[in-house]
Length: 70
Image 1 (cartoon, rainbow, N blue to C red):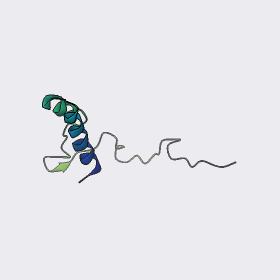
Image 2 (cartoon, helix red, strand yellow):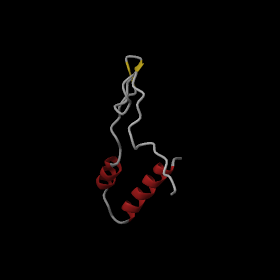
Image 3 (spheres, rainbow, N blue to C red):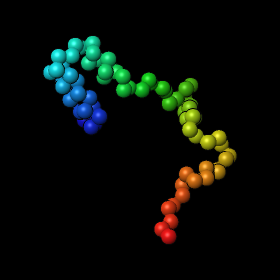
Image 4 (cartoon, rainbow, N blue to C red):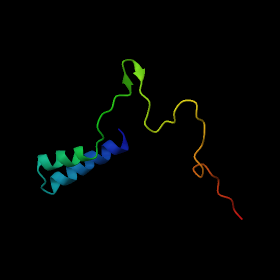
């Protein structure tokens, strides 16, 4: 079981012990979930919005710098 799943189950049981209703527990459990987005459309992988366009191999300045000790 993933740690996040275990934490959600623990949090739900804790809320129930403190008198929260099932509707409140379910709404809090659903609040942290991301909406489902399929990775494939028509059998082809979708491009991520964070991916750079094909053909550009430029690294943004300052993103991958190594700190120097002076």
